[in-house]
Image 1 (cartoon, rainbow, N blue to C red):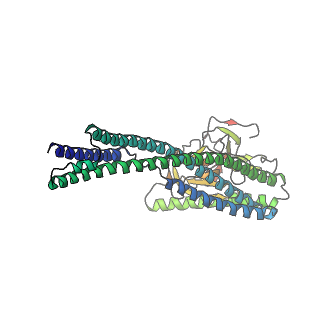
Image 2 (cartoon, rainbow, N blue to C red; image 1 turned 90 degrees about the vertical axis):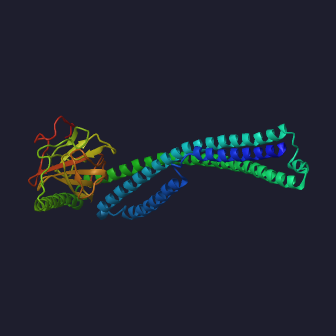
Image 3 (cartoon, rainbow, N blue to C red; image 1 turned 180 degrees about the vertical axis):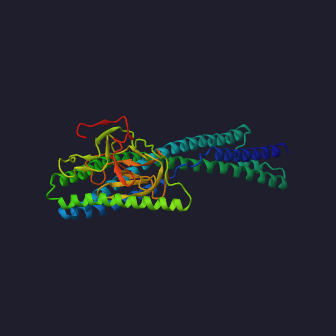
Length: 407
């Protein structure tokens, strides 16, 4: 009778230990913050961008020797730059995701190895318990029965212990498989992360080359004024058309706001610098173009020393009435501050606002760049009051600036 109770206690003990270990395992397993699906999604986006890149290159190749289509070529170069920039952001996101996945997999691997050690200790506990009782095998327990009913009771107890033993062994095997898979996944993530880093370096070089190519095309247009006269005239006319359209939209918005009983003017009289730089490379009015020829009637204020990553801020609060691309201004944004009062921000690398959005003074509108008819990264900033372009420097709206020698 004592032996029978011993077997029952041992069986229940093993089952309890196995169940407890499963519960602990469930609690220790880290929640999945990053999965391979996240990587796959980014790779699919990268594949789409690569397809777009090939299409853009084909279109550019078809425009290379067509001087009449120089503005179309300029636009495609800007689109190519945007595509490469998007590829860079994608690769950077992949690298970040890989880094998260690596940290997570290392934690999961450590957890699995700890569970394996715990499971192995449970198995050893079972073996030691058998040795301490001098039991050679399950069969010896059955053959030691004193009656048929005793044998049936022992058989039931032995089955319980055998099931518990088998679960411990099965769990141990499963953990060993899991550990092997985690190690493989970890090495794969590390390898692909390094490959992504190398790809990032390559794409940044490619982006720099594309920017230089776009700038070279603009300089070619300006250096050959007679040859590209129609193109230069077209750009100048486009700037005037943009002003006229902005003023029309500004007036229309003010009328709509008045009809609703809403104030159309916002933050009257106060302007802040649209970028963190205070270095003026070109002022409003007479100047020689960057190439030494071309337009001598500059329509805005150029702010340099900004690169391709500086934030562009709303100089005054207002409503975005234009956010698009043009051959002259590249990516540009226009904010209305009341009928006939606007600010324009041009040659952006990217825009972060859409038409209809109300922006507070200092809100980010986009990032500086050199898109459109531009020979280097800068912000072209225009201010209109009562429907006329004005010089924000002479008006005293922007102070504390430094003029470049060529401004």
